[in-house]
Image 1 (tube, rainbow, N blue to C red):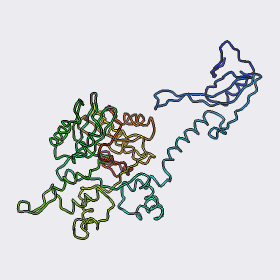
Image 2: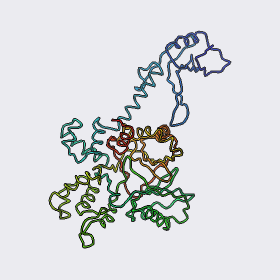
Image 3: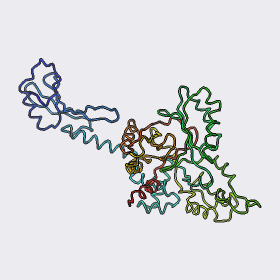
Image 4: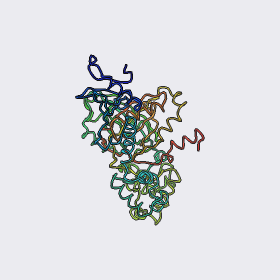
Length: 457
């Protein structure tokens, strides 16, 4: 009996005893099944197994040529010409090298081991200056300066603010989601519509569970819903029936960047002393606050003196205001956004909470998952936050190759109990910026929440 062998020959054909004996000897050197295939003057031998492939959703056969057994029982080892298999004696060695090669391929995304460290610094503390950054990562000043310039060009980095001031000024964040029944709106016409509305900060067309996402800023839910209604009533949505949702959303990790046009609205919040308003109201801004927020939103590394000069402010006003805005939680930090992220796809995932009690019982797993880092130029999740309709959580993630989104979904299913996932792939950004970056996740709201709720340090 050939218990451990797969014999790919006619079952009526006898295998010579000498060949059987040679196979028995090979058996002690190979842990997996041996496949035997008849050839001229003998038999080709391969070692084979199967491994679950999550990308394809099935087992994948893995094999390597072991050698040839002549009819007389002589074993002739392989002559491996390919450098990738040279020196390999069995399938375990082959699979180990394949795994190491896969890891090496991931590392090739970075030209230097310092690249991810610098990206984190630029995403978290870019205004600290090159001297402070170089000291933290352990590189000379000149080397750090060189790599910052290189990465700015490589990823199309520009600097902006991570804003927290909306509620202070009477605004909140809202989202609208649409799934069209048949016909989708014309992308170029829709782009014109959303771009001219300063309350819409980000609009993306997607394919999958949903077709359109609109991230808005509005004074209240009624205003947000009216904004959506007015947009739906425009000719661009004619003959495009579909289901729409509108809701608030919150930021846990990441942020939806503010378009420059929003500051035209914010200009109305600048306080001017009058008889009716002798003092600045809670939802109003000093000119220096408006100027600092607007200019840093456009260029997070602008010199403060240039802001003072542009708005005729007292010398030192912008620098003082910058630190005060951070101290008062109006602005979290200066951060970056990449215009050229090295990604394949961006996915927006809605995790609908079907069983909130089950989710809350394992909420820590969700926190840990969203905070997890990856050896890539971007955070695993560039955005995560609560959403009211569909009730649950909205996450934005990126992929670098085929099959990655399925792996991310598997991780989320394990960590978000009581939820069902609805995934959409971004096909077009109509307006706004997704804020691609690689921030230190220990500097995020979700990390603070994790420490507070579970008393961990």
